[in-house]
Length: 306
Figure 1 (cartoon, rainbow, N blue to C red):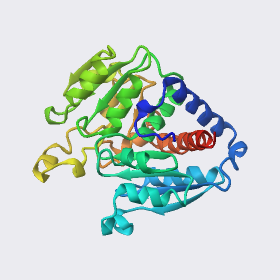
Figure 2: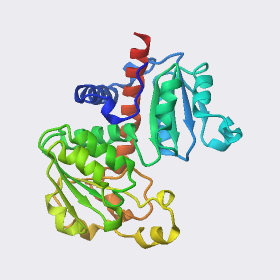
Figure 3: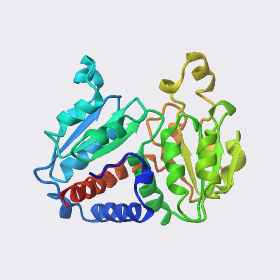
């Protein structure tokens, strides 16, 4: 049974194929209106989410399928102590495919090992968020016309940001990619990501604490919030939360065709004044998330049928 737990579960060819299908859905949504008729998606969200959960639900509904599930652990049998394995065994009896978010790293992997239907990891702790990465790749491809020969800057919380780790892993398989890492010392990209992904794939990268310094060379800028829920103490969070705030003046030396991305939710790391800038792509990203999830749901259901 094919599931998607890590972005590396997909080959570059499969990612490119999903992007092509998503672009076709955007061009002709009616063609896909009954692609998942009579199929059910279960959304098992043990951790709060707005965009990811609603995006999965909208994706399935627009494919002609239906949705069931829960949006917090307290409204599921997990509150009674039921294991993830037992939960997905039971849910597999009702649904054709499962999208799962969980605060514990590795929980969706356990789910995939025990489910009898495909499982999509919708985020597990600070670990992986593969459908956000697919969303990001679709956004870059649509805005820049390519996923090759780009300099991509990542700014903010690079230590705990699962979206950052996943996107760097995915981009490392394309050609001519350069990575610029902007963060406070305490929130630097983990050394295992640098070693296992960047160095392993010979991706040139720069680490700095100054966003203004590197802004002119960026083709894409990926902003992230400093995540309160990943910190062990409030003091560290409060000290670091406003480290980088993107304001219009910081974009004065940026390329005219820069794209500004953010996995959302934002707190205050991008000023609302930037929303009017034509280079702001983060709300386009939200919409792209629905289309790429439609493509992925169809792919996994098709493979499950085969």
